[in-house]
Amino acid sequence: MEVKIWSKTALVIYRFLENFTYALDRFVKKLSTIIDAGDTFARTGKIMSLTDDKIDLINLKIIIDDILLKLPKGRGKLIILRYMDKIPALEIAELMGINIRTYFREINAAENSFEKALNLKIAKNEPMFLRLLNQFWIRQVYEEWQDKLKEGEGTLKIPIDSTADEITKMIMKNLKRSRKVCDI
Image (tube, rainbow, N blue to C red; front, side, top):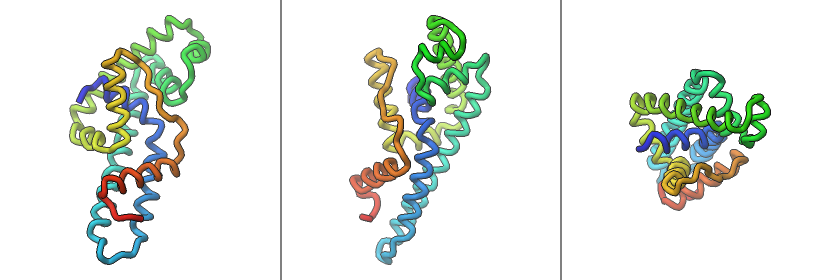
């Protein structure tokens, strides 16, 4: 597990964490309303697993929030503008009242500071981070960043406006495909 890739992954998925935990809630609720006595044990196990996933996602959000709040000199704000708000570099430079070269120097320093802080959190919570990588959507972003960094590219294009309904459908499709849960 590479910290640089985890750092980029965490920044990209941060904006989806709230919608994804909401989608997990909806999926668990749907699972719990199915009445099929023959599959109760499997469904209960899946509900428990999804609840554990939700707890890990909430803890990840708390970790990222904590890191962003503790970054020096407004670097947290730069990261939020770039990764969460998806504002282009030139606009951020204008908003911050800095030239574009300063912006790139500062965003690089902010990303490095975030990466170092995340490395400490990973060391303390490695089992949680490994469990998070088992979630298909996080694994997908992680692997895309892995490929991008190997190719020397610094940007990753993923959908930025996924709704809870779309995420719920994505979860259900993936779970059905892997045959880990009963048909709904």
